[in-house]
Image 1 (spheres, one colour):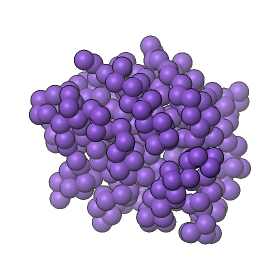
Image 2: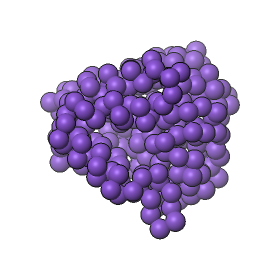
Image 3: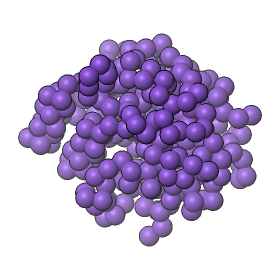
Image 4: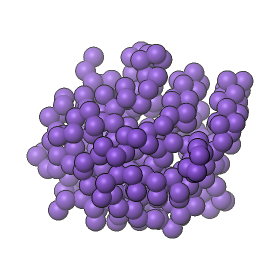
Length: 265
């Protein structure tokens, strides 16, 4: 099976145009970019895919031990780019996919030209002056809940991602997306996501990077985004005046405008 089939890769836009690759976050799939990605299809080669174990990816190809680090997910990104013969790739990654994009760039630095990190966090756990937003006990509680109740963790996490009654539709969509993810895979990916620490990787980034940060984000708070911006040489940051963790769902127009202004013409 090819890597394109394995990850349900979708390619749209003019052949030969600068490629923009959209990567989704934990518990989601490529459909989460449907309000944003089409805005670039007239000028860019738009690539979307499902991470291993997510969405419509081939679950028979998922191996728990193999995908115990974000580095393995990054290898998939590089493999997709190589299979499609993409050069000067603009990587747009939401949440944990932001760090996957950083690792993909470090693995094959000549292939990526820019990074757009939407709601990124290099570490979710508070640590000696660093604000990640959670204590180690908070993460342990979430993982314990996922272990003990396969059907009980989705709604609380969806509410954290999308708080407020004005985001009911988006929250329901996230809840449904979480429910479609196989529970054992969701739990393993959660551990890889929330227990990881990619802070030292950020200083090695050598391409222009934009951090898109929601003003009120309970998953990746403003200090976490500021840390990513400050750690990556020359990175810039734009704050979107919205709540929740998914700007591409809650504020797609603002997200499109910010990415568009950052992309090469």
